[in-house]
Amino acid sequence: MVKLALKLMELIALSLNLPPKRFEDFFKDQTSFIRCNHYPPCPSPHLALGVGRHKDSGVLTILAQDDVGGLEVKRKSDGEWVRVKPTPDAYIINVGDIIQVLSNEAYESVEHRVMVNSERERFSIPFFLNPAHYTMVEPLQELTNEQNPAKYKT
Ligand SMILES: O=C(O)CCC(=O)C(=O)O
Ligand SMILES: [Fe+2]
Image 1 (cartoon, rainbow, N blue to C red):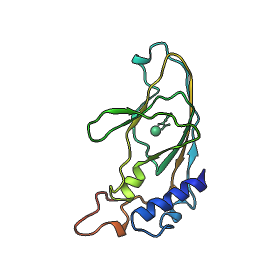
Image 2: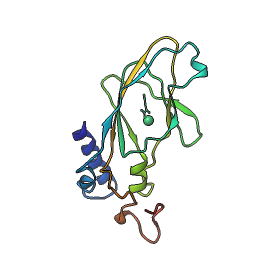
Image 3: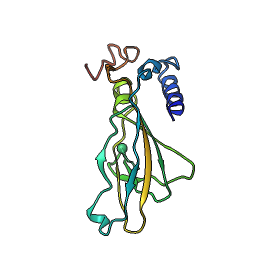
């Protein structure tokens, strides 16, 4: 999972016109972790949420889920909650708050939530890629200039 996450970070670096290994040092002492989520069937799904609306605070999330479904992402253009259909053998990749800051908002973290249903339990396993605890998170110097000043300060 770490290998996949670091490969994705190489692709994100390339997409920002940075050297592919630009983010490598952030993950020398990484604090990444995995969570195991279980959502039991709920008799009143309209009165409950599996997980309330939030953005992932780390760098990237790689999510494995079963075929039940329930994850929704908020579409920025109109604020609608859009269901993410489970695709067999596929991961869902979420951009977290740290990429938003490092990229000076070239990437934006996505708001999401989890609905429950009355019929079937659901399982999901997110892997959260996180840097070392001592990392200073600020926009990369290469991505800021006078026309595009840093939107965040440490
Ligand atoms: O269960 C899911 O699909 C997502 C869970 C989630 O958003 C989280 O654990 O941060
Ligand atoms: Fe999340």
